[in-house]
Amino acid sequence: MEEKKRILSGVQPTGNLHLGRYLGAIRNWVQLQDQYRCFYSVVNYHAITMPYNPAKLREQTWGLVYRLLACGIKEENLFIQSLVPEHTELAWILNCQTSYGMLGRMTQFKDKSQQVQETSKDVFISAGLFTYPVLQAADILIYKPSFVPVGKDQEQHLELTRNIAQRFNNVVGKEYFELPEPLFTPIPKVMSTADPSRKMSASLGDKHNIDLFADEKRIVKQIRSAVTDSGEVAEGTMSPGVENLFNILKEINPGKHSDFLEDYNKGELQYGVFKTGIADCLLEYLQPIRERFAEISSDKKSVRNRIKESSREIQKVATQTLREVKEIAGLI
Ligand code: TRP
Image (cartoon, rainbow, N blue to C red; front, side, top):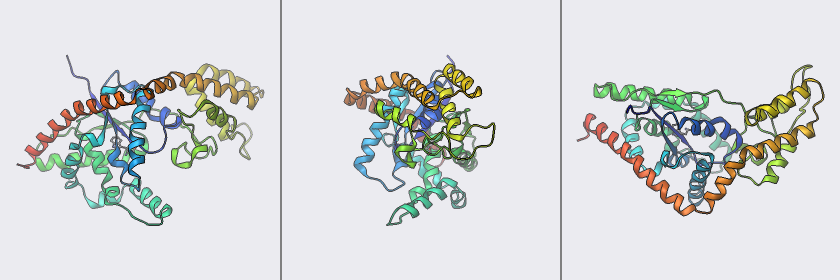
């Protein structure tokens, strides 16, 4: 049997799992599992590049694991980065094939170091934040994937990964690493419900994002209070808030989306009815995910054991790559 092509991606255990993250990434990860051999990592080593709290990190790491499983990620495809320490050893080797200049040009580094400067009293920009993309390159290359599903914001890190792989290949005089391709899938642009000019994100604050696992009342309230008319809008164009709600509805219930769009086009759309409709559709759409989450939550300990086990299985692939890398790189 021909082996399936491989995919690797990672997600940081920071912030909540909101609708933008789900529709933009996780839903796609779930679908890719049929076609590819998938490696999905909760990248907790990346999460400590910014100021953090250890107890909270542990909780958020497992919390994200439960949520990803509830969304439909298979246990055997999911692992925790720190349980596969080979990533960090490969990262060291790759660090030595990465130039200081390249890292300094990474926009995520520039953004995040600025964020640290603006938000903390004790400004501390870690070397880990600077070399973050090298660890990411190691995460990827250690599984020799053909594709890496990521958002556009990670394009630069993927390009760097390819540069590092190429340079490593040149140094060892062998086309050892295949250069992985980013996999950009068409994804809906989900904006904040409180400020539709900004992307829905965890860092903007609670009222800006819809947490998949919040209680029902909260979800309903959030849709109800979503901004619709935000000031001046040119004749014949939809306001950004209304457009955002339509975009969300299109993803979760295309039939209802067409119905409401028809009303809108006839000038008969009532926002109250529209919002209640969306809230109902959303809860219906999320029901299986939320039910699975409740099941998982009642049996956390065994889920944790199984994820430790899948991490050990996945580690075997990483160990093999690292062994080969050290061999060809002259590391005894
Ligand atoms: N940097 C990615 C992000 O911020 C997370 C990440 C870490 C990742 N390692 C990865 C993504 C490997 C894809 C592949 O979203």
